[in-house]
Amino acid sequence: MPERGRPRTFDRTATLRRAMDVFWAKGYEGASMSDLTAAMGIKSPSLYAAFGSKEALFLEATDLYTRVEGADIWSALEDSPTASLAIERFLCRTAEAYSQADRPQGCLIALGALHQDSSKGAICDDLRRRRAENHMALRKRLDRGIAEGELPPDFDSHAAATFFATVQHGMSIQARDGASHAGLLATVAGAMVAWKAMAGTDAA
Image (cartoon, rainbow, N blue to C red):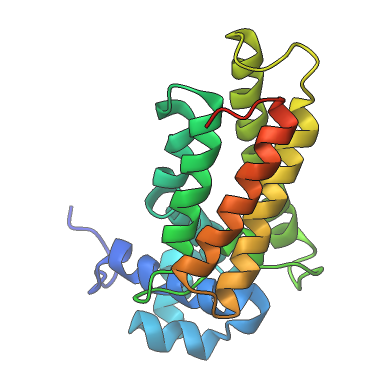
């Protein structure tokens, strides 16, 4: 039996990517439905039929962002042979990603919604959860450095993870305010000086 209803006439993934860029540039509250439909090239009924609501669209867009924009940054933690290199590559890849001229600057997860939102807090709660997961990824890599003997047994991995997550969030704001790649790398250099003090070593 043929499927009932009018078939979609747009590429859902490409359309979601365009919505992601709007949310990335303007945030959840700042992105109006007219902004979204204009960028996506569809009418409101098609948006609601495909994605359900603005809230559901944002949540799906952040999932896409995590997969396509954040993966290279966070893979540095697992791919690097030492915790020191993991932190340095993590921050350097952040600087590169946040300063690309062909996309919004900064991070959607950090900047997408910082105040209580109009969806009864669901958007803020989701972004808070994602930031907590990122903090845990940093802490796990630092704990691995302790287990492998690179870092001292009394190294405070929670405090260090909080520090480097805060550095990354600050880089997001700097990038949104127009900081260049070179300017962000200067922040990375300062953070790595702090790393040496935390780790109790002058080794790179």
